[in-house]
Every structure is written in C-alpha cells, then in structure tokens.
Image 1: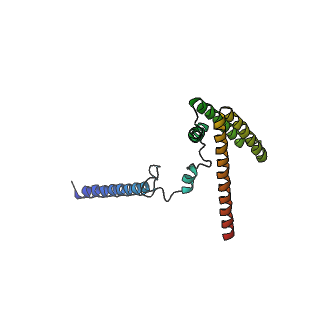
Image 2 (image 1 turned 45 degrees about the vertical axis):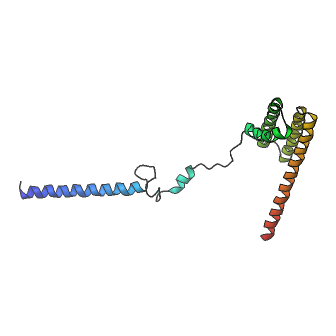
Image 3 (image 1 turned 30 degrees about the horizontal axis):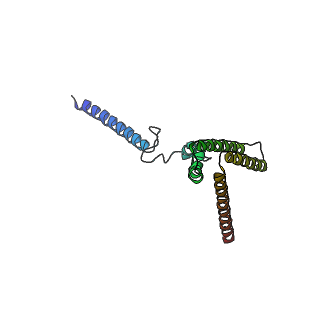
Length: 175
C-alpha cells in the first residue's frame, strides 16, 4: 500500500472512531437522565426533564380507604360477644343487624340529595331502629349489660369531645 492510501484509511478510521465515541458519550449522558429509554431511572432519576408531568401522573388518594361493613361489624362483635355472653345464634343475628345498619348509614352519608341536618336525623332514627332490633335478640340480663355499654360509650365520646374542645381552645389562645 502506498502512503497516500494508508493516510486516507487512517483519516477515515479516525473520523469513524471520533463519531463513534461522540455517539457513545451522548447515549450515556442522556441515559443518566432517562431520555434514552423513557424510564427515567438512571442516575439522575429524571432530573432535567419536565417533572411536572411525572408528578401529575402519580395518583394521590383523595379519599381514605373505605372499611367494609363486615369488618366493622366483626370488630363491634369482638366487644359485644364477651360483654353480653352471646351464644352463636345471637352473635350471627346481631352481626347481621350491625352490617345492615352500617350499610344503611354509609348510604345516608354518601347521599348528596339530603341536607346535613336531614342526614343527622336519619342516622339517629336508624340507630333507634337498630337498637330495637338488637334488643329483640337479647334476654333481660343482656339488655341491662347492653344499656350499660351504651352509656359507657356515650361517656367516652363526651370525654373525647371535651378534651378536643379544650385542646382547640388552648391552640386558639396560643395563636
């Protein structure tokens, strides 16, 4: 080979090597920022690209997870069964009454066609009906214990409300 041909091949090889190195470097730098593969999980975690779009795609739950009525009734039955000495038939009957109550109450709360005051009235009426249904399955001794439990729960709610209002008053006086 002549020196001129060798020089031309050498120039071509250098040019090809320079282009290859440039392309390789560009590919690595864009891969760090997620441009190359679309995942955005390179070293930069997508920094440098429009993050507002990726944040918009993230789903944020705006409502808490709804607890199934059966689960709530089961928790209530855990308290009622030992306190009232319920037998198996009573336990099943009361659990069904509680599930029905919870589902009805949820429907009332979710209803958008009813005013807040009417919702409160309907829920209070529902509680009275549920109380009567529960008492139908209890004997006299159990009814007395059930009434005592209700009073105990009312007192707990009242004490929580007074603690909450005291805390709010304290926070307001500090501000």
